[in-house]
Length: 171
Image (cartoon, rainbow, N blue to C red; front, side, top):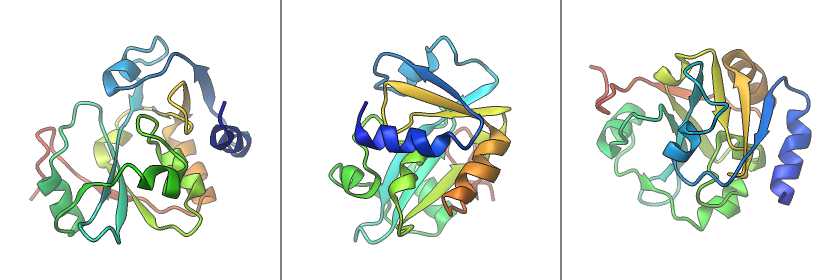
């Protein structure tokens, strides 16, 4: 267990959640195949983005099968030229490595340099799941606990965007 994982777990003790350990989950398909994931849980596809100048960073949460289309997300956020953030920004800003990207890494974003953005459809299930800064574990929260208790405790106000399954924004 890495130090970031340990610190985050100590923080999460204040919130009702389930905790599961498992083999490394490298992809969203690996996550969806876990035996404790069912249709009542949204396990998000998490994408770390930035603008061309790397002055604005975004952590985007999508439903597992929503395609990522840069143009749709850029339009929804009113930001042009979004792209994947450089991999070296993950440990520096979120104490994360590729494959373990999670909104729970925002625990380390003390200066709130990263905007949490979520597709509204991630709210469509009773529960939501993420890696706790380590892709060998998963935590599951009720939607209420995550959005109304965990995020406020981190000082985070997410930006919600509506995307069609095709990745297009609503008019």
